[in-house]
Image (cartoon, rainbow, N blue to C red):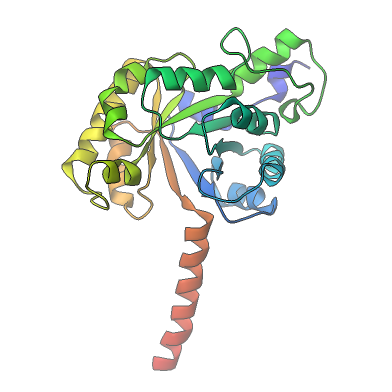
Length: 266
């Protein structure tokens, strides 16, 4: 058996077929059960958000392992775009990283270098990986398979990133640009104005740049605006970050409590 036969990334496969990827974000749940639940719900991808949670690296690795086992792609948004975070989450089982706050091609290249083995980067070898079921393969074969499966998703969260969309999308090794609408709007002095024309302009410019360089675009920060997200999918975006486990749980709890209170009014 070859390394590439063991290691699959369902997200990359769906994107190659021009299909839309459904993702959810994990900030609250510490149990590995969330991976199976996400798979049962129909998600293609999870990303564990270490930028905005107190999740440990140990728990992150456990959830990634569970996701690999059930056939859902685990990604991790790192708290800082540095090798010590990127290397450890990838060695722990992540199939890709989400790099927040990217503002230049140079920053994107540094993320790629940390995420990829030579000749595409300088990620260090740490021995048998969970992605390969801890099997031993010739180094060249294993590294090539892991490089091919590992995704680099960079986030645009500022007007500065938009102005450099073309050069960032051109960076070899970047697979996707995920637009973080909320932080982007805040940086523009337009916090919360999801329907502002500059949001559509941001997507139009980013999609054009990514299409030019054979990259993909993800929709983030629009969990409460499904019609707007659908508009950007129609424009060419191919991944939707649907919201966090906190949002999903709170919405279900609120609905159930309302049902009971409504019973007493009947």
